[in-house]
Amino acid sequence: MTVSFGSILQAVYNYSRLQSANDRLMVQLSTGKRIPSPKDDPYLYRRIHAFEVESARYETYLNAIDEGSAVVSHVHDAVGLQLETLENMRDIANKVSAGGLSSSERSALNEQYEELTEQLKAIAEGTGFGGETYLDGTYSAAGSGYRIATGPGGEYYELTLPNTTAGDDGLDLEDTSVSSTGNANTAVGKLEDAIETLTGLRQRLGTGEFILESRAGLMESKQRELDLLVEKYQAVDPIRLAAELDRNKTLQQYTLAAIGASLDSRQRLVDYLFPR
Image (cartoon, rainbow, N blue to C red):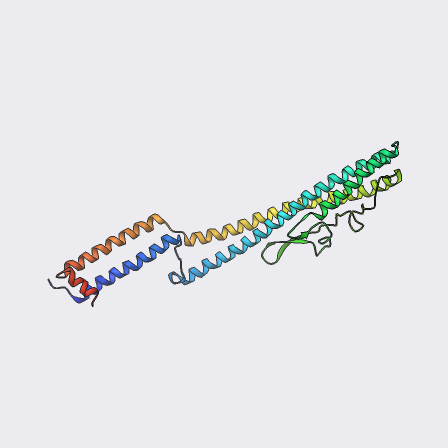
């Protein structure tokens, strides 16, 4: 039987093409990506990469919002504790202000009042993360409040946090006492002001939590859109790929068999394909 040199070359070429296709299918199956490298489709690969980079940026925004939300929640809880402390202090001050107490009763209540004042200070000084404190006036001025990055283009949410320590530059309660009816009357007025300040702050913190939750939802939605685009271009059907791989391997076996049948012997096939 006469075998043309061209037919052998064509068969070898077909086998090589099938092997290259199998290599690509194996990579697609192992990576789960239809276009795992730029050489597969340079334009589409760059486009997919741009989507992935943008999605990663939204992940950064989401992480910043999560971190900021944790801070806002932490401060919200602390302000709630301070409000409870202030209300207890006001109750004591109102008792003394009403009169009719003995000196020893006023003294005992004044001790309780001073303990609560220290508790108020401790809450303010202990509210923070990573060495930062949030209720000492650091973030009290508009324009220099606590900022949380919430999106592209430099978007951020700013929350001003007043000084809620007991000192003069805070709630101005450090020098108050209920050691006398007059002092108690003065304390009641300052406590009412402090309670009003913290009630307003707690409301703003609640609003801040809602705003951050809304912006996180928006960022998640945009990130999901990008991820769906990546999935659209990169998604593979592993069952179809496996079937195609099996078919190619079968065709390779047929190709080798055809070449072997066209030559005088298997050894000649080996010598021809792999000359020494």
